[in-house]
Length: 112
Length: 115
Image (tube, rainbow over the protein chains, first blue to last red):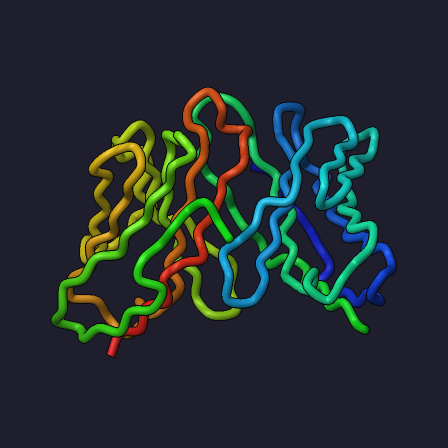
């Protein structure tokens, strides 16, 4: 599975959009981009995933560049409860590929 | 709240004890996972069960023994653990083979301390 690069930490003001970047320049055609977050003392929480197209759900939007070498997770109106470590993971889909390899992630701190 | 339930939430045990961690899901998922997470580190995969059969063992020491009695339950039996095994143990589930692009859903973990 392709490796990802994320900033170590980011800050965001409450109520503003949080844009979390992820670089995955070695991604291959059948690899999906997943985003999870982990709030302190909880298990990782699935946020969103995508292959080529931009995706949106009730939690966030995922913007994938046309060459698929990078993506951005957007939390449209960040709240204090969005403070967490955000993991961007690239994983091959299909078959029986179950491995999910977490990197170091980005610590997002939402400030009042 | 998560749909993957782990018990107990906290466990303290001595190095000679035998204990078990339990994980349960009722989402009809056929793949279940154990991860280990040390403090300030990302989760690391330990075991994967697919359709109640062990599919992946990431070279985990034999003092950790997984068991999948049915499609909804996953256990992790612990025996003769070392202090360095103190960590957060996370269980996850997903739909299973043929749907491996579908996300894994995690429980909130068992925080294990070895005295």
